[in-house]
Length: 324
Image (cartoon, rainbow, N blue to C red; front, side):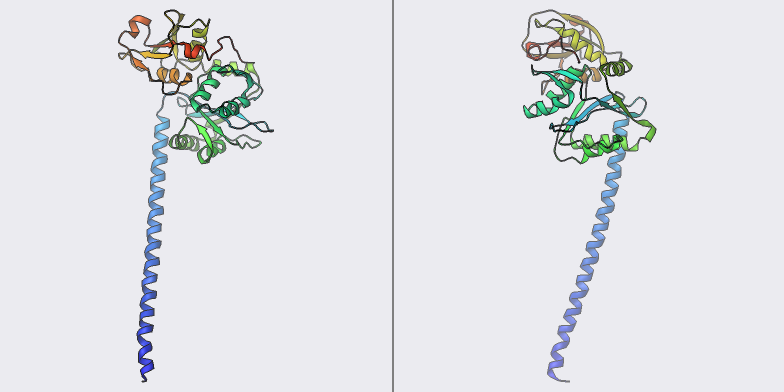
């Protein structure tokens, strides 16, 4: 055997060793990826299950507006997702965009499909837009979602709409990603006969739908609305909207010295007032508004919760405005 052959053998041996190590590395990476995929699937299933339980256990109804953040030549849909946890069903209301509302802040009257783009252009926060829709429609709303484009098929599909919300990258909303995930999971697991679509073409149809929802969801909690401003009927308007949302309003009045800031006070001894407090906060257009505990609230205002309307709200709202 020549010296040249003796020199080639270590090279061949080293080459085989390298290939063996490479195959082992690839195998380890493949096993790791499989384990990661399995673990991810388990986590997603656990999150979905937790989301279903979280949403299903909420005993109060929820109302979420879905519309476009921009106004184009096409007719943008105006949708309200109504989640009825008591009957485990989801209703997608498709309101005609020709309905006009008086827009909070002195903007005048606008069609429903124009309100979101208008206030978005004005850089208003999502909480302000939610309040503007709630006051205009005279119906409490829990959340609002503005998408760049709402893709609607000829046959409106609620689950398809909620998938768009979950996967959208450009949107303005009072819902975070986790809450949008919960909403999608809740709708996804409902049987088809529990996911309904209803069209509202006229003002009379909208008022009839609201009337069907008029039931106090937590009758043990009482709420008063006190208007401290000079705006006539403002307490009545706010009280009616809260009643339309299922809150038990026992008193509306105009009295006391005018206060600059709107406040929500509640008796710390009151029970089961979470829903009433939540609806009062979400109806008002002020970011960061928090209810204030008051030991004298029930004795002074004869209710568990009181909304004291200040000039900040009085300057924004036209109490005489109605749907057109």
